[in-house]
Length: 517
Image (cartoon, helix red, strand yellow):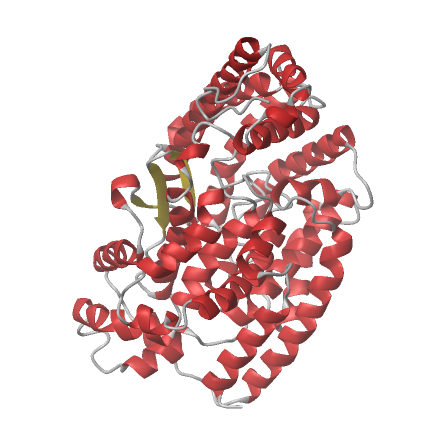
């Protein structure tokens, strides 16, 4: 039996040890080159969404398209096939990291090989251009200018699904790309139950005495927001020596490479919560990637286990930690110092209640914990309809308004606050949205387990001591990257499979206390 460590060294010998060692080393080097391409693509993508001049969009899209095509070709090349064929006969001799790397590459190869390189390049160029078109369309409330690009993206998705094949609903293939093993058949009843319980709880909230949050919409200087947010995320654990904070139309976090995980937010002078909780949310994503095991560097395992697990970390920090009373018991004094005039008449209790107001809202990224999942369900249902052909792109603005009215009782009077508010469709990320609600479910489940292991959870937050919390997350979630499957991480950390009841219990307890019912 051979045991191969991450650098390909041998700790055991067989008659073919030298040859086998060389094969593993060659495979690892080939995978590293693929990782280098991805790093370059991510960096160019980050720049395109934060710093790129408008006149450089077309050229940048072409460059990203070229690099993405080379990245794609390497993942589906004859060389990759030879590497996989050689290792397939020795899977019982591979260490866990090399074995999972092989499995991920094999899965990606089997899927990607079914897409012609020229079609992949065309899709990449389209989506990079579409992101810029979307941004302009949103700024000018002009869905018509974006619609042709979205129609082409949907057609590409349908084409790719036909190439890949699927079982059940065609949307299942897209779901699996973001949350392995997830299907429409699982999500439909899960979301149906969660929607019913959310609506019932929301009705109680709407019947209770309203909470005043009007002061959050006073004028808050953007540069002061930036300075405060920088200090805040640094204190909770975001490492600025391994990242940076910038502005973008839509907040995001992106891992460029080991030691370089960047976050962005929006600074709105007329709404304080956007930057505060956008920064906390994205730092949750980033701290996950900053804490990935070094053993996974230069492999496809050096990223989150799934988008649902990834989102659980951002929602955990944004909501369960960041919107807790204990959190602002620690940070509110500093915030009042920064905005001494704007918050002079606002107590900690008033601030805590205001940042947790539950009420129907138009924009997903500014939705409260209670109504957030309803926003996701609207997008999920639209995506399914676009993919199976039961909905058409031209009808989306009206469909959006109808579903908003049905689920939340309000509807936007413009497309910028409606169907144009998210970047995901312009990026071709169909199947992504459900992971947000799955992240909420996972976050509540992780929090329940964490509080059992660390009963002083709230006291630590109130004292500004986040190290023990990050240590628990690192041990149970962060370090593993994609070495473990999402279900394995849940089971390891909480002792049971995914369970939405933890989220329902958390929300019910929180909002019953806030609204006194």
